[in-house]
Length: 613
Image (cartoon, rainbow, N blue to C red):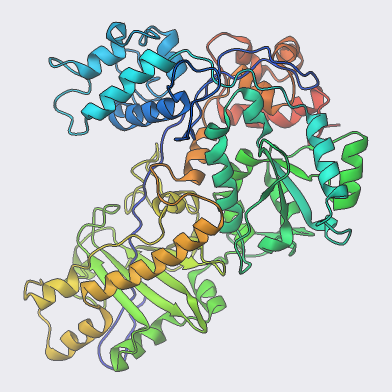
């Protein structure tokens, strides 16, 4: 990056702390064996989904007073935190146990004896005083409370059916409900119908998950549609059914009625145009289906789109990461273009702060950010004429030597990359990662920053940033100004430089006030979306990771809107890549299933996709 000189001393930009958190592993467990066009309750034990949370009262089908949904969720968290490092699906397996976060597999493979904790190898090893698991060398260990939760789950809930007897909801029923909602709901005028669209979580219900297990998917959907919005209000999707599985949105609430386009990341030219942003989303979603039938035709005619319904978790997976994340939010190709669109002149703002200290720019520097092995600097700018928005930019370094050592030269350092967080008009946050000259990139260089909870460690724009900033901006005490004030710094600064440092780098308490202000603004927007604040699992990242788990036969059938038995019978007509679906205790990788999905929809005559003749 070129050197920049101001009227008093040379200055450079700064960097932002992104502490990526909570990319929790999740599981795929059996659902119910019911048909797409049949209604019934035949099925097997339901699995525990990634979003099971505490609720009042027990779950249907459970003995005694145990809340098995809550206990199963807590047990999964305990195993994920304490055991998945060595025995999770993304780790090198020890002793052929690589399914520690799959409660069903633990039972099937004899590691858990339902109803008998003391005869369960899992509990015996966790509670052992000699040669326990995790080994005594591990600092992350289950607490006594954790052991009691696991013991209670094994004793009361392991192997117990939860919601496998959910009455099957067919695609015909779903489309009929959508038609009735669209054409008969008084609040939807004829003029509004072309802007109405729907998301579905029916496949999770048909798969056998209980409502509390699906909650995190509801939260992820609401948070993501609002995190992809350029409108000023937070608007939560509206459920149209008693089970809260089908959600209506008005694309005008998110500025998705504006034309959609795809930018070539190299040339910057537009390579594809769409009449609105929803059509862009549907085009890039490999799970988009054009449903057929009389009711579907009525809905298509009223809405003006072939794709009026999308699978919610598939939407989360495709839209929470580049390239679609960039295209939906219309994030430009360079940091400079983004700042210009906001009316922010970073260099002029810095110069003004040094000259007159109007308190519109604040900078902090850190020895240890928790993400990068090297120094980081962060910088906050007020939005002009928008008191409810702020712009943060980070600059990251590949080393701490030479012109990368901000503690020796707080003004003229040279960064190797940056990460940007800015408030959307509705108070939620948008994200951008750029290289050393400000060009937009999808992933941050792993040698500079890492997502410690991602299997490959890569920080990906959108998804990784949302996981990190579950509660908005993360408070981090500045080191540089504090060390200067304590006469502990590395640099040798004259009086002018000291004055500039104190103008640009506020005291810790003042900087922390800015963090709190922006975090509060973000959390108010999250609350308005109907999403619980904080928590161990960030909804979007949890659903994103859950979607990437391997797909077993029951899950595949639910997503293909067909019965498990029908799918098993017709596997020979589908792509050979799906053959493993017919084998016991196996499945296919999610990317394999995604690649075969469109053709399978055609072959099963569920609807039309790009793969249909």
